Image (spheres, rainbow, N blue to C red):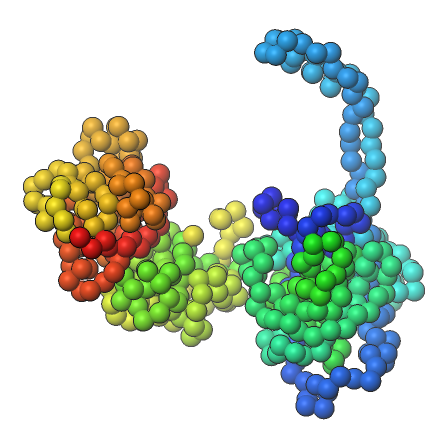
Length: 496
């Protein structure tokens, strides 16, 4: 299921109701698009032959959900806080007559196997009590759910038509180029069998719909009801599953999103074979490498995925990956942005041994990691200028960071609710408007590392800050523990 904060901006394409501002969602992994010959890249005189061939393989999805509710009369008003409030509410809830109503939704899908396997979006069929698949000739069949994957919003259905059905072929979305012609077929507004054409507008779009966002963007008209329908290249191969639109009105404005076939084909195959997805697992919590973090680590540019913490006993720990490492490549595939790593790991063969390249303490380190399987329920100072704090001092101020620190003791652990096994230097005060405050550090945070070196006293923090200044670095990297959650923070060093 999508987070509630995303639902406000997403208008599911199968819903037949108006929403003011929406992204019409239909998260389905899209097959890869095949490169077109130079001649085919030109605008065809007509899509008629292509549409005639493909239409029989595109289906309408109709779902019905029985919703129970109670007709409750108006509750007598009681004084606020009175025990009669709860009494009246419970009495009328218990005795109100129960009613049921049937809610119907429409979406799209397509046949991927002549035996009757149909791909659609998970949200098209979510919470449905009855699912029907309607073919182009209006034959209607009851469908069963073979498997579903909420993280990619894909679902696989099965119908028994008693005959072979016309199935579609997956294409290769990895070679799709911006500007390639594409055709979308679906069931917009319940009209069924509607064909639209456009081009690929962009690739690898992240619309914050899920952890594996990698959408194709197209200007082919996609509307409510297109969810789960296919996006074709000019060879008639499925390169995407139409999933979402951006729209201030609820209708198509030429910005639609499709899950690429490179993701969808693999997910659908696993749903058919296992009834669920099997994804690779690394066992790390990661964060974005900002310009400041890159500079503080001596990295040439802001790239890769910064490891904030490593799961105990996980594949990463077994492979010697450490907190503070920046993963620059995984399985010989470069990691330019943090969000690419979860996708690549998820697609990696479970049990396979892969090469991992990390940046650690100013140098490149090559590692080997055996990929595990992701379980679905697993669910990323004394008053001195530059910090000449005496080693024996229990408190100290790092003016260049705007921090007052203290060495942990039993009294401070009790006062700030610090766990017995937690280690680091305690932040006891923050200078308002200072560099640490700008980065959101708070009183009670524990600084565990500075510049990837463990610290236990304010003097050690001060020494690492001074070393960073001597190396002409404008910021210093802190590993911060807040209530058990670890994260790296690059804090600007303020010149005195």
